[in-house]
Length: 305
Ligand code: BDR
Ligand code: CA
Image (cartoon, rainbow, N blue to C red; front, side, top):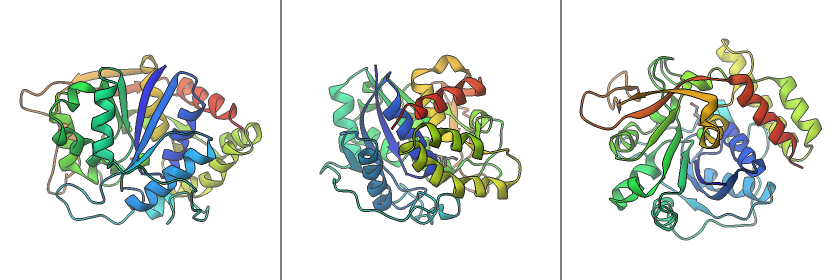
C-alpha cells in the first residue's frame, strides 16, 4: 500500500482523482490538504470534506493557504470548474470540519511520522508544499516522493501559451519546491493532454457506479463543455487522476530526468523550463500509455458504489 496525501483545489478533475484514490486498493489515503486555485481555499476545504464524506472515507482535511506566496490573489477558475467547484452541482455543507493544524503544519507532521514512506501528491498550486518546505528544513527529505500535477515541458501551456494553471497560480511556490532537495515527479500537460475521457466514458462509469460515478458524470457536463470551447480535444483531460495514478503506476509513464526551474515574472510567468544551476533533477513525465491509464481509472471508479 502506498501512503498518500493529496493537496487539492477541488475542482472537477480533483474530485475524479480523490474518488480514484478512494477506490484504489493499493493506496492508503492518509489525508487531504486544501489550497486555493480552481476555487477559494474556503470552498476547496468544504469541497474536500464533501468528497471524503461522499466516498465514505474518514481521513482528515487541513485548510491551506489563501493566497500565493508573493503574487496578489487570482480569481478562481470558475469558467472551468463552476462557481462552487463541481460544475453545475449546487453547494452543499459537509457535516465534518477541517482539523486545527494548517495544511503546512499537518504536512510537516505527517512527513516526520511517515518518514521515507509518504508520497505527496499535489494537484493544485504548490503554496502549501512550499510553506511546509520553509517550515521544516527536513521536510523535503522526509517525504519519499512528490508526484505533482503541474507544469509543461514541451506541450505549451493551458492558462497562457507558456504556463500550466497550477504552476501559473503560484510560480514562486513552485520554484521553492523544484529547487528543494525532494524527489520530484512532474506529471504535466506533456502527458495529461494525452489522457482524455468522453461523455460516453462518464456515462459508462455512472451506470456501473451510480452514486459516485454518477456524481462525476454530473460534474463532467460543465468540464466537457469547457474542453469543447477550447476546441482541440476529444473529451476532457484526466489531469489530476493521472498524478494519483503515477504514485502507484509510474511504469505506465516514461520520464526524462532534467533540472526544472520556474519563470516567475513577465509574459512567460509559470513556465517550467530547464534550470541552469546545480539543482537536482526532476523526473518529467513525457510519454504515457494513455489507454492503460484511462482503463485503470475507469475500472476502479466503476468498482465504487
Ligand atoms: C490543473 O489545473 C486545474 O484546473 C486542474 O484541477 C488541474 O489540477 C490542470 O492544469
Ligand atoms: Ca486541481
